[in-house]
Amino acid sequence: MTATANPNDMIHVRATPEEKRSTIIGAVLIALGAYIFWQFGLGVEPGLQATFNLSLQTDTVQGLAWVVDPRQFSMIIGVIVAGLGGWRLTRRALQYTNLSLAISFLLLVMAFLAWAAAGSQFSLVGMLRSTVVLSVVVVFGALTGLMCERVGVVNIGIEGQLLAGAFAAVVLSSAFGTAAGVLGGVAVGALLGWLLAWLSIRFQVDQIIAGVVINFLALGLTSLMSARILSEIQTLNAPERIPAIRIPFLADIPVLGAMFFDHTYFVYGMFLLVFGIHYGLFYSRWGLRSRSVGEHPKAADTAGINVYWVRYRNVILGGMIAGFGGAFLGLAQVARFEENMTGGIGFIGLAAMIFGRWLPIGALGAGLVFGLSRAVQQKVAILNTGIPSEFLFMVPYIVTIIVVAGVVGRTRPPAADGIPYIKD
Image (cartoon, rainbow, N blue to C red):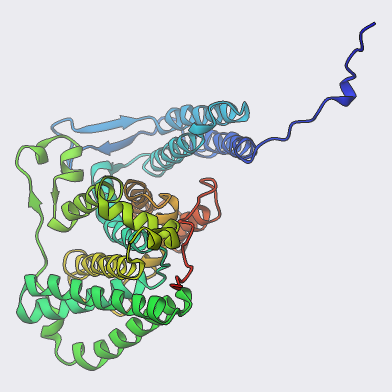
């Protein structure tokens, strides 16, 4: 006689966090697809066309334009996004959840732009070019935070380092030339990086407080000197704008040429830094030592690595990157200094670092997402869509809140991040 299994005695298997997240995101994407179908599809008057210019020229004589029916285009996108949501509800291929989310975000942007440009023209290439430019400072900020946190030091002072670097670059460039301005911005960033390291490593000051102190110090000093010096000696606030460097042949590639190969050397430097830091972190002795100090400093110390020196070095290098980003902001993007001109970019850089999972290439991707949100905000503001400008101004910060709220899934910082090391 054999015993039969009782269904009530079967063990209930709980869904894993990733399965729950896949279900939630699936439901959200289905709702988002329905909204796109209704608002951006059915909400457009039939017969209208949206013209996306695929060159920086304002005319379409050469045919470099993409003409779509925004009504049909948005309805198709709505169905695709809802389909991705249904796929996520099946909880299959969980590793593609973030990819589904990213594709849906890009499709949402395209549907929104088609709706906004209905009956008019829109420079798609111009927006994509602006995306790259507006992501530069964010990526530099993310790389600064990554350099610090990979060795266990939290850097909340990125905002102040960017601001101080911009001020130094503008003043020195106005007085002594562009090269002096860039070097001055990098040097000031390095000085503030050293100050953060000195407070956090030498005196074990709470790293969050140390970063906040640097932010207020930079904001106060630059505001004071701007009011007392730059307002009276205006020639110190008139740097020569750094021109773009057009790369022959590559800059002539349709769409991609204007996006990536017709920029200032700051933009090219951003890509070199991203891939250089990635290679250094994962394929060099410096990177191995940096990661070991950030994960288990006591074990690294036991292996003969000078934990204090590694942390000092990386935090100062991070400050130099922030100073370089500030120089870009002051010399290439704005070409003058304005009080509190960073406007929270340093904190968006921290969000990009988290979004990128403490990886250089991830930080680049996250920076491009934030750059796209700012570019859309700027371009749509001129299309007379009826959306309040204040709401459009909020878009980059809304994206920041969504990212830090954990929509991209659980992220694990370095194990020793923010923990002072005390040598026995």
